[in-house]
Length: 287
Image (tube, rainbow, N blue to C red; front, side, top):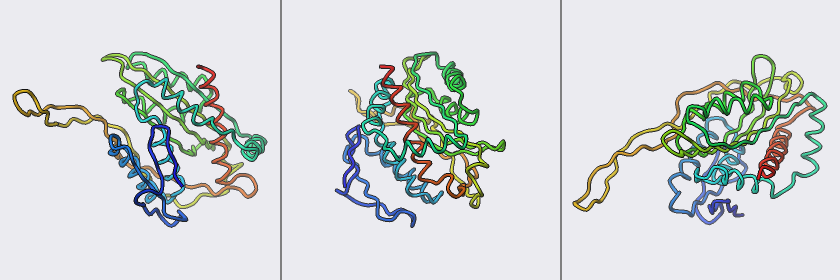
């Protein structure tokens, strides 16, 4: 089987294989055929494999690899990238099973939030603006903080994240977002953003927790390096700034054990699919 992503990348059976942990039932084929972005793709795949080895959830890691490669890897033109993303995600309507799952979980108190926005604004206003957009759409603070942390980096950025977080006040939040940032000039950025979240009372859906494991925390950081440039009078070294994703620490994570006949891991995937689909419809309606 071959998967062709929207940016022209191919993930298929044409070349070598990476073997994932025992949770993956088979070898996972990974092929990168666009030489110009091969280095970026190798980094994406490496992060996904590290996540699988660290957290033990191979299926989730593989899905994240495919989705990140499928995003428009060029962070320029954030609005166009958002539209391309939305068109891809709405190419297939969620099936009846997905809708039934969402309707069933609404009966146990699930609340839904989604947000789509784009703008051009001063760099120092990016994080406050994102926070206001999410707050006005009813997102919980833990999701707002997670998204806003990405806005600390006002260089070009193309990022997708998802998580199922559980807070001490008894709330669980299943969220997913994509963020595109382009530096317009020294003082301004272009930004496009889409986010969806489902909030639960943890006690209603979670019976217990698996043992705690440590999950790596990554952030994009600006670094400087020297490159050799061929000039008219010979080669010379020139400094340049690059963005690299580095591990900055670890955080403890626990995997929930769901209450029987209330929620399952498959239900979580159905919720994310449903919420993302409708957020993407909102994006397309913006034009």
